[in-house]
Amino acid sequence: MKKKSTQFDKFSKKKSNAAVKEEFKQQKRKWKKEREEFFIKKKQAVRRPLENEQAKKSDKDKQSESSEQIPLNKFIAHCGICARRDAAEMVKSGTVKVNKVVIIEPGHKVSSNDEIFVNGKKIFLSKNLVYILLNKPKDYITTTHDPQGRKTVLDIIRRATTERVYPVGRLDRNTSGVLLCTNDGALAQKLTHPSTQVKKIYAITLNKPFEKNHFEAVMKGINLEDGIATVDVLAYSNANDKTQLGVEIHSGKNRIVRRIFEHLGYEVETLDRVLFAGLTKKNVSRGHWRFLNEKEIRTLKHFDKSIR
Image (tube, rainbow, N blue to C red; front, side):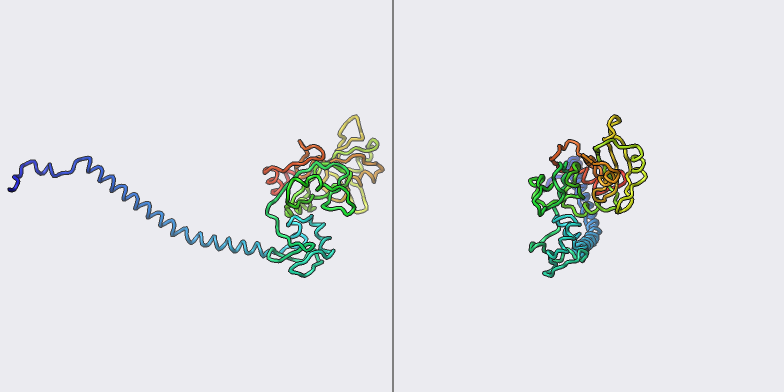
């Protein structure tokens, strides 16, 4: 039997407000999801060519980096074997082979694609860079090896790292103070190159009072066998003791400070480097060492006039 319709049927067939709201919410979610998917696809379409281009560029950079040619002695220094100057002597001695051929020219161009052997052992560019600040005591020589068996600065830091580090620059046997040791050949070359003009400050004790006329002579420049030697700053460390001096200098010539005063007839009893390239021996006792912190390493790598 057919149900009889009433005047309220048109209202009973309508959805409830809650159902309408829920349906609207679902539709809204659907639109939002479609919209997000659309823009994601659009971004990916733009990003993919850029990523491919960057990947190609990165591959080219790596290829260029690996094929970049540098002098053989510089390559050896960057491997952490020894300082660049020592590497040049090593090459000249005939102990270095490049692709199984003995090379005796330090300036011979090589790249990381070449097979390089030192004393029969293959060497590689060092990736684990180490930076050590040493407060050097007297009676230690600044070299990686001494045929005479004397104590070297590397004997002090032997337990600091398994990497082969070497001193940056030189302090003679009787000079104490700040000394940087690292296997970062590029930084070592930068800090020892004359054009960088690294600032060094020394505390000096002479065997007799330093005369005023000699003070003026040093400031004007002393004529040594290898040219005029000048200092940037010279001052008495103690107003009551004229044997105590402080000197600031940029020159990297061998034994330059001692030679200046010896030329004038003085004997340098103690010579202590208290600053090198912004590094001091603060909180590092004589004969002890510490690793450089990140800030110090960053400052050295971006060396500028602020620490010269």
